[in-house]
Image (cartoon, rainbow, N blue to C red; front, side, top):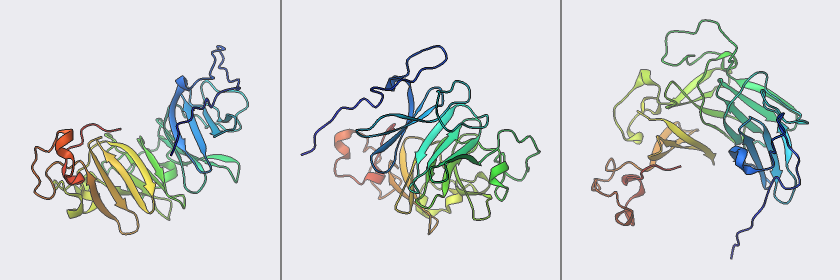
Length: 272
């Protein structure tokens, strides 16, 4: 049988900010990502990123732009306010900043590089799209409003975008933006994901994304769970669609009445 074990990743470390405030606590942690080989990555409120292995010691990786820790080998160009971090199946770490940029920390090349979005680009943006930067435009010079990211095992990046963070986009083989789910120019009011083109699916705010075995899983507005099949470019609903499926009674909302009911037909409530 499994047993709970307690660890203090910051035990024995000595990280301080300019005001000498002790950072040796998880109280400052804002984002956590789980990597391979029992590795964990932590981003704190000051945009510093640490790496810790179970049984090992905490290591500073990325220094925040405004209030950095000493000794971290990497830092962004000018971006602040980390929105999400993701440990990719390719072994690298990906970081999304509120300023509108996604960075890749490539451990093999020992580099920290902006790969999507350019907060400093002030050039006019195309007007043929509801996004700040339209599909088909260069991802590296794009204006994006990223909130969540996920990465495939071969390093393909998926991210939420749009004013309401309710679309999922990626970068194609040419290095250009491409919308996968919920491009408002193709809007369809049908709430059943299997029955519409993914680009036309009417989705709410994307609150989380994970990539597993060729499937991009995401939560829509915290009330439903869907998946996008990357190879086949199809959507599927997993849970939280009330009576949209199976002609199941809409009143299946109470915890006890959900037992034994189809997961996709039940109301989930707010999930994290």
